[in-house]
Image (cartoon, rainbow, N blue to C red):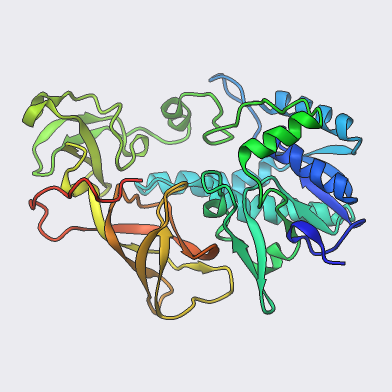
Length: 387
């Protein structure tokens, strides 16, 4: 009997489900229970709420997890990996901000925590697999496992899972691979799950509803500096480079009066060595666009790059439509990626993730966006990629 949902074993194998208290993981547990698996629900607490900027929703989530367990008649447990999260994810999160970059902690969390310490804990409980509510799929090509894009293109989460390894995928299952979000909510409602209409969580889990700048300011010393235009003309002061990201429009503290037509200003670059924030006026300014980028050493899900030079599609952010590109892998494992269309607001510290059709090949952290030749050239046409 073939195992469903990409799992390594068929029912009645024991499967731990990572329950978050949301509808996606609840339906994951529902589908596995209906398929005949022995399901254990496990809530993973990754952050100790120790500040006064509002509250992390852990207490509410745990109550929802317990209600899900009661409805599905499955055992549930709470495990605390806050120390591991601080050491393996949050420390790097802060280090990247200190470098003037904009990190994505969810990518590292999936590799180090959810499919790292959490998976090991699940196996220690006697589970034979770990299932989560991620919108992604698992396939096979010969002996190698593949990470596949989900049926719901808008919810697809392979961007955040691209650093998983073969050994991690070997114990993983993603029951929502072929479902859309409306279908998931419908299943939850039909089954009487108490979270059927619960709002999706957004943002970074350990920040919750706190003001981001205030939260980050507790851990990073603010170093105000010059806010300049593309020609180096000082327009004002920034509050600290970690509080801004490429492409940002709001919160710059300057109006449109410094330049042409009263157009809005956008963050185009950070210069950590000089502690300067570079801004440009107008959403189509050439400094906001790149034709290529360079990366840190890449991670390949199959264990190696398809070739030293190959064509594929890539995303530089979650939910972006994958864009046609060419990838050249250097001797150090880093990549130079050249796109067929201009890309807007490519951000160092974020990831570029590669695809061939539905297959996610892997990806890498962006080190630098390569500027357009001739910065003073006319702005890119409206057809340039902005997704």
